[in-house]
Image 1 (spheres, rainbow, N blue to C red):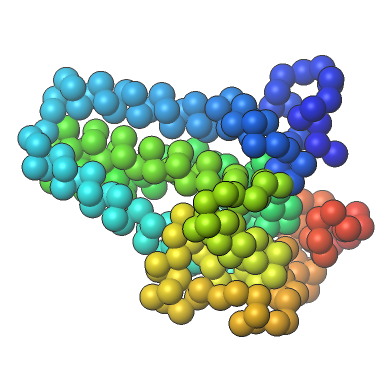
Image 2 (tube, rainbow, N blue to C red):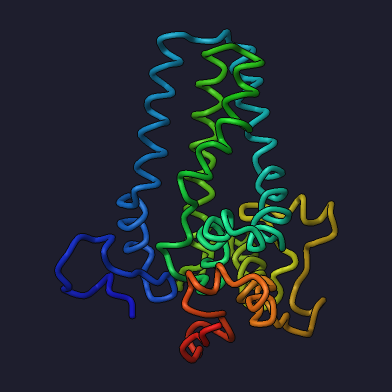
Length: 259
């Protein structure tokens, strides 16, 4: 049940929120109250402060920002396709809970807002490597600050548009409406494609862009990423944490079977 509109006692984030039952306004309110977005914005402000204290020259700064803006969609594609959708993390006991948190839970119930946002313990180290480090190599401390701030803001942008793609809301902008359709297909039809969030350039280049007409048959693993009951019997750690294995559409699902 979406309790975003109810009078339950407790703080906002002690309640569950489901995007397919929320309005755009409710999303905006929830988005800016989530601890990950607050952390990203606070770290952006801190990075700007570092840049002001120790600025890089104009050319390295522009080069850093341009590089991050260009590379971010490719980095997201690579991570989404080959890390989040990997079939090896759930086989490692120490990594099973991480894989469950960073993507399995999102596919189990794609509209559950609490598990849609990335986990800080994975996103922040990644941004330090792919955004701050290149900035440092280009422009020193100021370049690192500019790169990290750009990566953080890109992440905020991605998270918001990711939310919109799960919201019970039809975007008025045509390209965004198309993006939403492709992303919904990724979650409800076939998980092996349409990995982009804000654009599908890299899906086109790597041959993973599709529409439902291209793939008439629905993937049997779209809600569990291939972590089936058979797999869980051999690698049980995610199932133990989840109370079973996800089977079927989240709104028509019977209670998870224990494995």
